Image 1 (tube, rainbow, N blue to C red):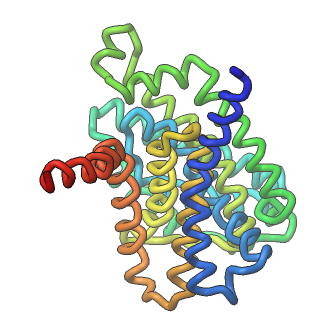
Image 2: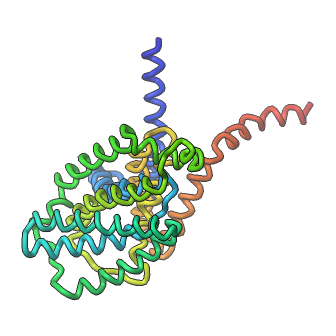
Image 3: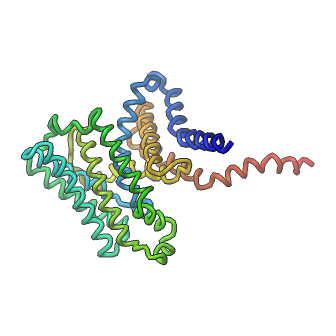
Length: 325
């Protein structure tokens, strides 16, 4: 009997977890059947969403303990450019080490600024974004930015799937099976209580920057190969590279039917469906972030008030009966 209850509970959680992307994709199939009613469309969307997923996993640790870092996109640009530059001298090894080490260093620097100057993470992120964007724009002029065939393998099949699977295992273990993971969730739940228990909140937050930087480096390897190009951005344009994965993480954290690490995958695919659907429907690109923002507000608003909404609908028939009597 107990096994049957467990199986039912698992099936219910899976159904709730998949409901959002399935419903969104079904809506796109109704609106644009010629585009979405084929298996290749699902594969393409899923592959596109993997980049958001990888970047989102680099942010899930920090966001779990209340950090919001918008410098992720700018740090990716610098790390990607440095990796490409190193690949021109040392091949694939230079690319991999260049991206990973520079991403790790930039993340550690951002975390050190946050901790050392005691500046809120949002302000730290915006300041780092401006600095790293300018650095990327200057650095890009110093050499020819060429993404060669041998380094683009990370963004193609099966490389991108292998990288995603390895990153998932690492992130899942760190988030759910380590002291570090438990402590950052404790800080996110109630930092004052966590501090009273002896948890060193500031040090752990800096560590989320460092670990996130390493994971962002893995994401950068795939993104460079997937996009087949890297172009420096200015005027805070790189913030868009952080905005979409950040929304995916928010969906993952608020999706109570599954683990947040899995939830980031669901959130990334859901946002990819919405973004792709808006393009297919001919919505002006300037309005796309508006629609995505509204979608996020509705989703999180529902999840935050789900009990009240369900209670309202349960209470309504009874209330009408009393009035009619």
